[in-house]
Image (cartoon, rainbow, N blue to C red):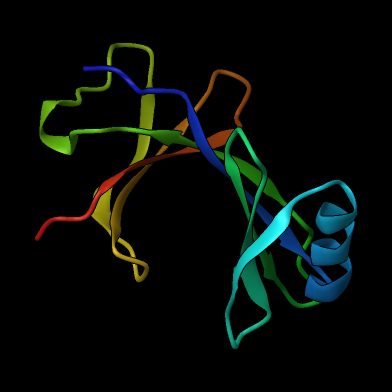
Length: 114
């Protein structure tokens, strides 16, 4: 089984409020906000954008999250470097991290077990 395209974009920022405002000015709607300076925004079509605030000493990052409908059926093909195998996330999904040939990290997200 393969991935089913981009499910979300995960971004870190130094200012959650400004980042959320930026995406809302582009037409995204706030889906939810957490109590720790992060949240998810959604457009009418396309992937969601999840933004999390990080300390000033951390460089803001961006990562694409690819959808995997069935973790059990997914097998990374030769040429895909698995950085971390599927593991539970605190938000109820299972996530694997892979590295592309240029060193970028990609998240593969599957439904949680149970």
